Structures are given as structure tokens and as C-alpha cells.
Length: 260
Image (cartoon, rainbow, N blue to C red; front, side, top):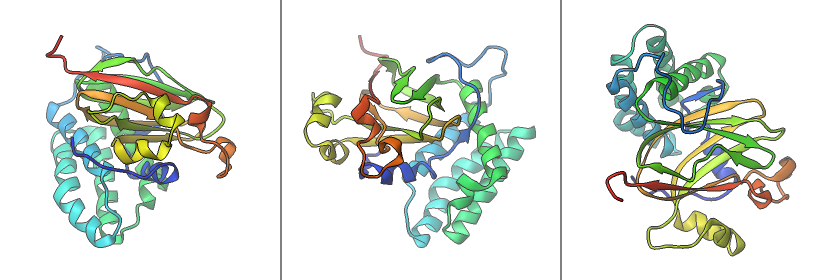
């Protein structure tokens, strides 16, 4: 997994606009496998989704960098998704592909998180991935102010997270991998200098959802200890304490299935 350092708080929330696979579907049991009634998708399609998600987690900022990054990192994953999907799912991937090409030309990510057609396509891709790819499917319920459904431990490998906001406020799930040489708990990090956590930890992903919304992400997680945290200010007041100060945190251990 490529190490990425990210600044805390709202800059992470803004990144959620680019870490997009889908929104707005119903939630199931945490850690559930894809329902057996749904046909499994072509593994190559699922490879493309995970590759796309990994690429967009590290999206650059300048138009010149975006254009090169789209060509080298994002489009190969999207082309794989197009090649190994059909019907309505292929049409949804096509809409997403067109939006990324537009982003490449304009440098403006707005359609990715505002255009209704693009949001609908993202919803379809995310739901299909969560339900029909061979991976660990976890449904996380965000409330004011807690995470529900995050297991204490999962196997390393591919994970799809459905982030369902059941609260009255906006919520995010920032996922950070603790340094391998650290034994500090999340509470210990937060009771000291919270900025040290964001400086030292490896950024693994971020999900964001407004009240009643859902966001999906598909990740390939290495073994390690991960922290889930919501840094959105309470009540939307930029000067207020983040939701994490009210207990909106969790710890997830990702274990190597080949070890005892």
C-alpha cells in the first residue's frame, strides 16, 4: 500500500469528493458476504474498481498533474471496468468514465459530486461492487456521534465499506493506518497532539455522507492497526470540537490470514 500523508480535518473531508465509487443504497449486516442470490461479477471488473479507488485516493491538485494522472492511473482501471461489464452496469461505468475525461480536460471535479447522472452511475457501481464482488463487505452506520458496525478485526485484503449516515449532521470516516513501530492507541494519540496522528499515520481512505446518505469505497487493506475517525466540527461550527471528541472513533485490526 502506498504511503500518503494527509492534513487533518476539513482537507480530508474535501478529499471525499474525489474518493467516490457510489452513494445511497440500503444497509445490511456488518461484515456480511455478498448475498448468494446475486450473481458474482467478473473478477476483472472488481479489479478495476479497486484500482480506480486506489488511484483516486491520491488525486493531485493542479490541472497539469490531473491530466497526466488520469491517463496513467485512472483510465486503465476504468477501461478494465468497461471491458468486463455489460448492460446497465456498463452504461453506468461509461457515465463515470466520461466524467473523469471531463475532469481531465477541465481540472474541475464538481460533476463527480454534484451532477445527478454521475451520482447515479456512482451509486450503481458502488452497490454492485459491495454486493457482487468477492470481498469482505462491511456496513458502517454513522450516528451523532458514533460508528456502528465496524468489526474489531478483519482479514487483510479487499474490503468494501458502505458508510450510512443515520444522524442529523454530516459525517465522515477517515481511515488511517497506524505506523508499524507504534503501540499507541487512538485515545492516546487524541489526548496528546491530534496533529501527530495525521502526520505519522498512513492515509487509507475517506468516506463522507450527509444525513440520510450513503457512500461506498472498495479498498485493499494491508495488515496493521487502523483508526476510523470523524473530524467534522460539531454542529457545523468551524470553531467547535470535532465529532471525534464526542466518541466518534473506532479501531480496526487487519490481520494476515496466513498467520495464527
